[in-house]
Image (cartoon, rainbow, N blue to C red; front, side, top):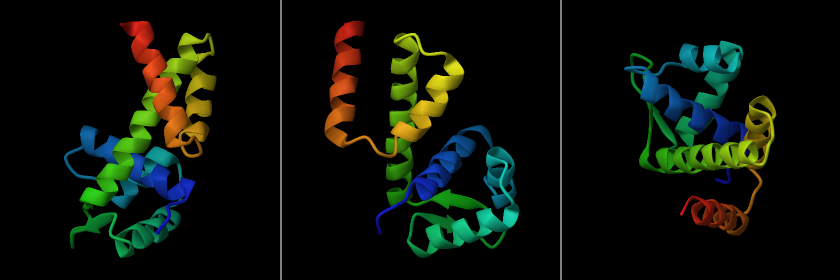
Length: 123
């Protein structure tokens, strides 16, 4: 299954919340994204059916290995792109918004080139 931007955002949010909270539930995701719980429930069903997450009987949500791989890739892109945009003089608010859009559409080749450029500047 090819993931859309929305699914990638959900996986990224689950990853981020799992680093802050002992367990992640649909209500936590809904609160974080300011979405209706019904929308989140539908998305979680789709992610579960496509083996990106598991959900316990108690409603605790965990990323599968595949889900974690996607979430970590998107989160890395988000962090690096927002940092790069801020280094270019973009305000933090705009850098975060734009990084969130770019992270889903940028090619692997272009992202790796940006990563390499940033590493050269730091080194």
